[in-house]
Length: 374
Image (cartoon, rainbow, N blue to C red; front, side):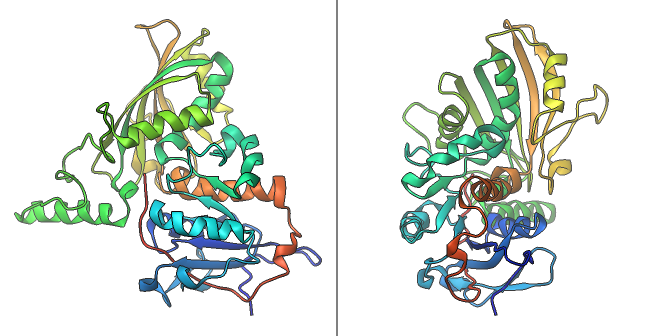
């Protein structure tokens, strides 16, 4: 019998949904969030590489188990949408195959983000961009640091037009996948017992340290991670905004933080910004000018919101503000945003009752390599 995670009303049908890379950090979160949000799925297939074939993962906290299948042998024909968390190289191989079979790909890798024929979507920010997905049947999920930043910036941009952004990120090791989290844990343990803290995943020791280097260096001295934040923000929010970023890896397991400085075309006060952010979709304003009156990654871990704190005016520029932004990078920065895109795709285009639901076999399950990307 097919796995039916969400009972549907008689006469209605849900979607047939694939999660590719379901055994990685982001893929597991995708599966959990689909269950948490009771996504209207008639069938769920979880895919991965051959090394995980036959493993089982739980569908959220439901007690229902999904059997992992090898992505190499999976036929996407008749499936409605696939959430990809398999890294750029595997995506290059499988995304066109799935898209050509009629299964819309929602891709978490960086491969398609800047493709002009692929919409780059944060539903709270540019939901209408999803309408262009039919060009390639692929939708891109942005970089985790970009996603949380544009959620915070969108309502402020609408109010006073942002001219320039200066951002420094404090990015957790989970952005580098399970191997990044393992390295922080192992190095911390080794230091406590007097053993060497030799780096393998990162370029320098990450335990009790910070590393101003994420992804490869470019000719201008910036890193690819910093470039992603610049070009993705322009594509999602406004190509006229000037942006400069410094991206730093910090010894935090989950949750990215950002110190953001903004210059606006129009006048906006800190109180104006707080009022706007209190009403903004996806934003939670926690901004008390007292000890502990702000959010840190520990409080944000496991939550869906993009938290904003420390909103204050910058007197060094005309119409300037500074703020602190924190979010769970595995959720809003990756898995949650992908599921929100799937929900938006269903509401706006596919709609329940899609004939693709009628075709196909019983539940399939697969995973892909743990190749999470910032």
